[in-house]
Image (cartoon, rainbow, N blue to C red; front, side, top):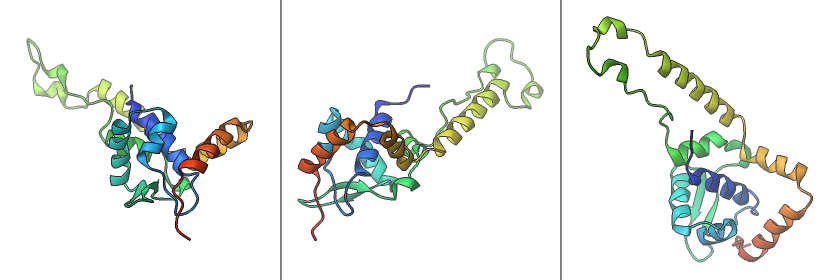
Length: 166
């Protein structure tokens, strides 16, 4: 299974947004710059995250993006569904019923074994994604970071974070 680059970008952006002070935002341009990705491509995914309620958009000069829910309430599954859509990765088109010498319908009363196996794998995959939140990712990183990753992010946020008016 191949997920789009937008999934990786969306997850990394969500972890960065989780680092913001309450009420602060980051612009799409800043998020794209930090991750070295196309601003227009990233913006498409930020809009999908916004439509799903995973990020909130704030208009105006201090505007930008921030998490729409607490980091421990946003799972990898939520992000994948927002960016890729809810359809399963495998879609059975019943090709077993095509071709020469078609069989009577009675041979197709039960679901295709291939479709059943693929959908079982999809359920397991989705179940695993539901077990990991943005907060979990941040906690895992914090436990293994020697300070370099945190310093890079903090330095960038010092310059680019749009702090809420106090």
